[in-house]
Amino acid sequence: MFVILFVTALTAYLAHELWWKRRNLPPGPCPVPVFGNLLSLNYPPPGYEAFEKWTENYGPVYTFWIGNTPHIMINTFDKLKETFVRDGDAYVDKKNPPMLQLFRGGEYGVMDTNGAKWREHRRFALTSLRDFGLGKNLMQEKILIEVQDVFRKFDENEGSETDVAIIFDNAIANVINQLLFGYRFDEAKQDEFVALKKIIDAPQDVFGKFHMFLAMNVPIFRKILPNAIFEQPDRQLANMCLDLWFAGLSTTTNTTTWAIGYILNKPKIQQKLHEEMDLVIGSDRIITTAEKNALPYMNAVINESQRCANLVPLNLQHATTRDIVLDGYHIPAGTGVVAQISTVMNDKQVFTDPEVFNPDRFIDENGKLRKVEELIPFSIGKRQCLGEGLARMELFLFLSNFFNRYQISPSFSGPPSLIKNSGTVIAPRVFSAIVRKRH
Ligand code: HEM
Image 1 (cartoon, protein in one colour):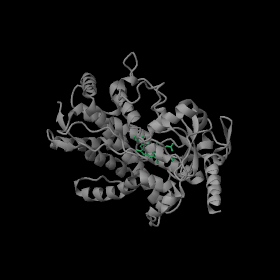
Image 2 (cartoon, protein in one colour):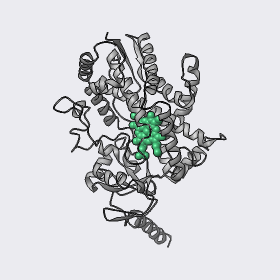
Image 3 (cartoon, protein in one colour):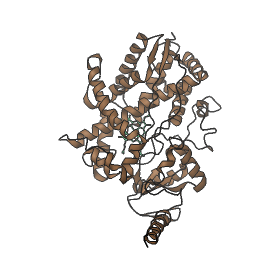
Image 4 (cartoon, protein in one colour):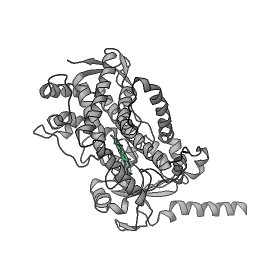
């Protein structure tokens, strides 16, 4: 009797999991009970290959299960334009696991809020960035102070093994900290920087790990989560600062260190960069954004670094704000939707041999920078990264000035590994290398 009951219950459960709950959704990979499709992202990490394979098998739209929650994945640039761009309002909400509110102490900040609160604080953040000098020389001046500080540190260690990531991390933190709190972490404030980094990196360490990603999304694992992090009286302000600090620092540092990591693995690219610098700049003077258009190869290297670093393999999860019809499927309001930018940036039709780091794909037959619409590291639609302008300015000023001034070579242990971790965000390349002044 027990066996019959057990087999009937199991059959009903599996029928529900494998067929019933999926019957009205676009076809996609078969979810495993409890985990959904999350486990596939680890074979191999960070999941690009699984996403590409599913796009090949199911087309530009398929359903991906995060634990028990279905997410409609949009995987081609054309489909993203049709959905996240032309029908942007329908895709603008965020679908946050309830556990996230635990860390934040409620629905606060800009990254994980919706509706009027999100609109107001996004506008506020964008206006503040403009007021503090973005789009004017003021922001550039602030960044160039940090470029010179980076120079000072590398000059002091010239010819010996130097930890590259930590120097850029400190400089990029200074830029965002100047904006948020009005001061930089100079020598006197190094202890504060280290202490703050520890706190800021804690959630990154936590959320970046695959088991924590599971814990956030699979109910059975939630018991291992700590209690709320935020106990401050002004939670909106605290969460807003966290969002800008967190999103503004790790992404820009990670792109910078991956760019240098790729170049250390391909010495010819550094040679070409130096040839361009010698032709256009010709000394160790500071490069400004006014010279951006005169340095197409430098821009191509930055573009290719952003494409290959491909920092958010899954991207952040959105939700539909109203019922929509997608490829003939009726998708109710509140369903998870994801702009699968990592698949778009690995699209073989657009980027031949996408796994190869090749800046020349962004150079046209006249030696000019080629605009490629499918390069969308800052995502697409109404939630597109609000720090894009700042990030672009930082990447150009830090990397162009670094490569104009220095020749970098691998440490004695060789160039950094280019293997990626699993998790929601790709971690920085932490490595040491040897720099020498060129002028
Ligand atoms: C190379 C650097 C960066 C990359 C690759 C990057 C990438 C992204 C991506 C993929 C998103 C998700 C968009 C979506 O939901 O579809 C995002 C959102 C966001 N980014 Fe960035 N980002 C970078 C730098 C920055 C900087 C410097 C700041 C801060 C000044 C920043 C602040 C934000 C914020 C606040 C959001 C949430 C926007 C919203 O939900 O309305 N990011 N970013």
